[in-house]
Length: 140
Image (tube, rainbow, N blue to C red; front, side, top):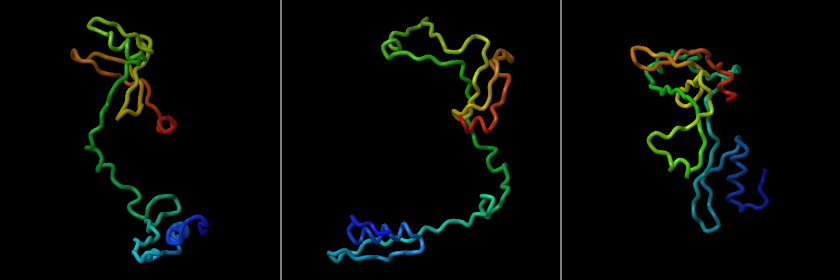
């Protein structure tokens, strides 16, 4: 596919990148300066099921010690910067979630479950009431 509006060296480079069977070696511009050549990228062979040709079932053990951040979201509130600046000790901010509604459980910012607050040895905890399906997480 030649590019009619491009200069000849650029057109040749573009043509070779659009057609992987063609490669161009270093070319010379009209002024005699050498330009870097382009060649088709080489990719790993992929099987018919979409998997690479490497180990089809790598062990999950390689990621078990990767740290993640688990957070609980009680609710949210929107306000103007002016109202935010007027907040002080004792101010009350109304959240968008009602008392008794389940909290959102997030892992690295992604919703993974819902739950309710519990107290364990004078510390807060959460009891999971619903785990979000992987399909719902991706649709998200």
